[in-house]
Image (cartoon, rainbow, N blue to C red):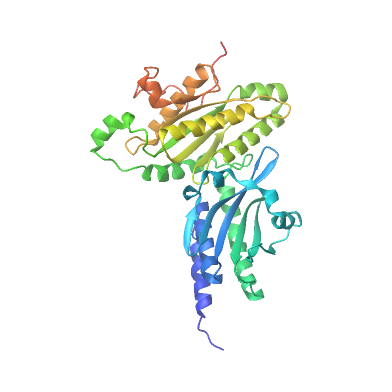
Length: 363
């Protein structure tokens, strides 16, 4: 009996150490896909996100490895962002309905596809799709299932600590880490810090930047008082679904508690940010909320700068949101635009107000 480890065993242990060292969904996805790609030689491995929009279940790729290259949604097209109906994947649907650990099929182009649903709190939130030119041996399938078991366990652990239990969005305690990462990813300055701070409100329109938005459901207290908290919770879940569908996987959406949400929007021009936020606002306005009927949201947003603290940036978005709620609600307001129009005073924060506030009294 030999005590030496085989190359496969060494490689497997190396990947398991890497996988279990992560506490972040994106890094966990990447490390698991890299492990599967290297260990089993798959042509393509993808993590597909499964989410609900209105009455439809949609699927969109979150992270994938193809021909040795890792890619994610920020490199894909708008069509991929929107997602495709789950009904387009009948074998996956049957696998989920039968609660099987995996299902295999042969695609029209001859590829062998292995579907492996990822269950979180008794719901399927994602699926691993493995494509290869030939079927896998029983030994290889055991390796795959072992890696996926570790992956599922760590997904559940991360979700438990990072996610809001009602909506499934990120919770408030995860905000600082995600925000810090986005600030560090902000575009480097062209001039000195002083010059950058002076000119930050006059950035060229075509520059891609990072944005922070604060969303508040209009008159949410009336929903709870009129229809009860169960319907109020349903509104929160539906708003979360609309948020999840409106933004990309590389963006971050948080529920801060109550009816307040925060969005971190990555790599978008001002025009695109306005368009994306306005589209979300319009989607909420046009959505039919059972029993409740019409619901609207107000949104304020500000640019994320390396030269301003998180408290200041949150304060800017909060001021823009307060302006929206004080001037008719159901609108999107940009902090810099309000400052340029003289409707807000730059550098003045709501020191006497909480970050999230009670709704202004109806006029």
